[in-house]
Length: 405
Image 1 (cartoon, rainbow, N blue to C red):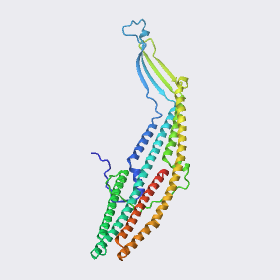
Image 2: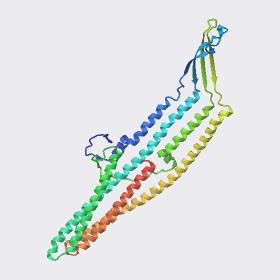
Image 3: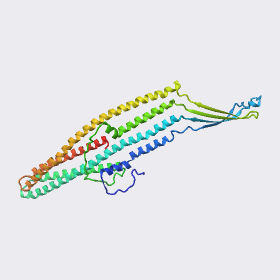
Image 4: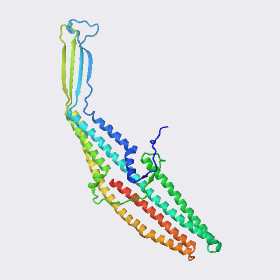
């Protein structure tokens, strides 16, 4: 059974985002297909200036049918050898070569589109891992807190300083935290499998990420249509397609140029009285004839309108992209403020509330239900925070995908 992935031993290495993106760029098979296709298109350019193969032939020339009565030796005919060569117009072959050379540039622009999509997907997975590891950290800390509270409640219960239902309530919260940890660990495994596949590794390869990696949002200051036209690979592809279409139009216009043909015939006369003879013929096509020029003239007209349509479509896309990306910038900055509030105000305040409740419980000033309420409030805020953080990171990945950063 053939292997889908190269057999390579990967040690337990810590990869940062840039290393993963570089490995995808180098190894992903979806990108390699574009490289091979572009090389194939470049190979066709070499044959664009080739001539048609020459035609050679042999025949009887003006030879009487068998059994026919020959009145004169000169009527015995001849054996003819012929050679013919079509000579294409140099301007036409040159235009064809230029058009074919432009095809690979369009293919490489398409490669850029796929590479950008893969890069955005890898960022989303990497950011998801960062958030999920933070979620596990929160839940392990919460589980440890509730385990301590449960132990303390179990110690107090025999002395009538606590209630049994509070012990079971704390135990249920411990299992909830463990379920959250199990769910997060499953999400981590799935994300790692997807990253390995993007890097063309075996899905089960060991992979560790840099959990200290800081995701930064750096909006582009001068984000206008000129910037997008330069950086967006789909716009670059459209530009190159327009250029290739213009070269195709130029090639079609060259159909008005004539082609040439040279034909040489040599006759060996069967009669010794007649000398050997030859025919040398030069021909030229007349593509400007009205009944033949309609074909390429209509094609030129059609492609010119199509090129104009693509140019207008490009301008419309740039305007829409600019508005969309500007709107994304605004949403991300707004969410960044919400994240900051969670990190600097909400979570610290709720954490202090829980610590005060725990201290009061240890001093027999509060019951365990109040501590559990504070624990649940903090836990819910952490869940909201990590969910918001995940969405924030996804928006950054989408923003960077749209500006191809």
